[in-house]
Image (cartoon, rainbow, N blue to C red; front, side, top):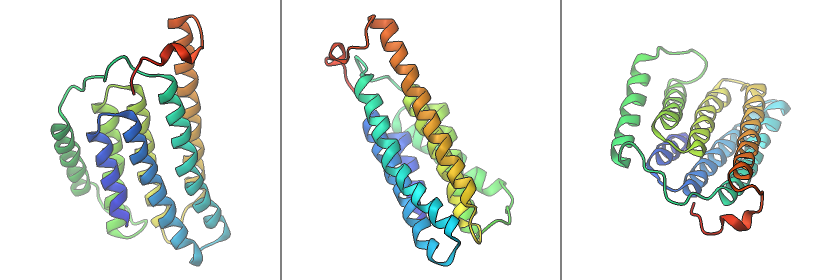
Amino acid sequence: MSVLVLVFALGVIVVRRRSLAIVLVAAQSLTLGLIALDLAADRSSEFLVASLVLLAKAVALPVLLLLVVRHTREPRLVAAAAGPLVRLAGAAAVALLAVLLVPPLGLGGAQAEQLSVAVVVVGVSIVIARRPALFQLLGLIVAENGLSLLAISVPGGLPYVVELGALLDLGLVVAVAAAFTRRIHEELGTGDTERLRGLRD
């Protein structure tokens, strides 16, 4: 099931529409939350709380991000510098290279560590390869999900790392939403979202 976290991350670097990318990040976060919840039975109550935080994040962040998309339509899709297959191949190659070069961290199982490193690298690749600001934000969330995967894979888990990561994600989304709202007001002279109806995702 952990492999799905990486698969969803690679999907984000391929898709063009912001709303679809948000759905993929939501699916990634939900998968992460379900993995943590499955492990929670044998761990502390703090870890159970962290698992529930991950599940809440999987619902709350996508809702907030979809609201941002709804209120910040683009007149046309932002063209990417490279095609989807080139982005996918590049991200996969860099992730594989990172997995091969990063020494064992000794925090959890080898497979969990390698998957975590790969997801973090793919998240950074999304930030670098995608031009729209929202995609760059999604890349940061993907990278943080990679760190969360490592945190829940450590024997006993690191619940506070998970909770701090979720708080960071929420802060980023609120900051981006505020920045988009301010920019819309500056460009249109109003916060009236009716003016945006003709624009696209």
